Image (tube, rainbow, N blue to C red; front, side):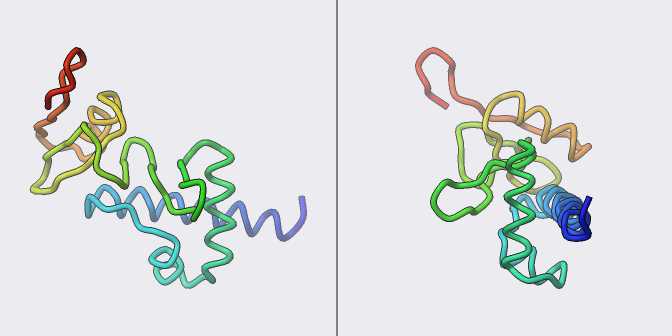
Length: 121
């Protein structure tokens, strides 16, 4: 293992921890510029770490700009699966993620989801 690979693995771990803590605490998934500032690393390094996490299927990145779409169970964009917990509103990609958000937050939650048959939410 090279020194660079070790550094990238450590950075990816730090990014992962930061993203999930921030998502749980704020109901917002931080993006590369935010992560760069928080961790004191260059945005290019952060984007390399995000790519590593996406390859490992820890995150889902947008195809054109590399922004984080989801850090399961948290979704960065509005979806049909909304979770109200601890005074905040979160989004999940599916019902399983919505339930995962409630478990991750560790607070009572109200989950709103569309009807599986007609799509009305």
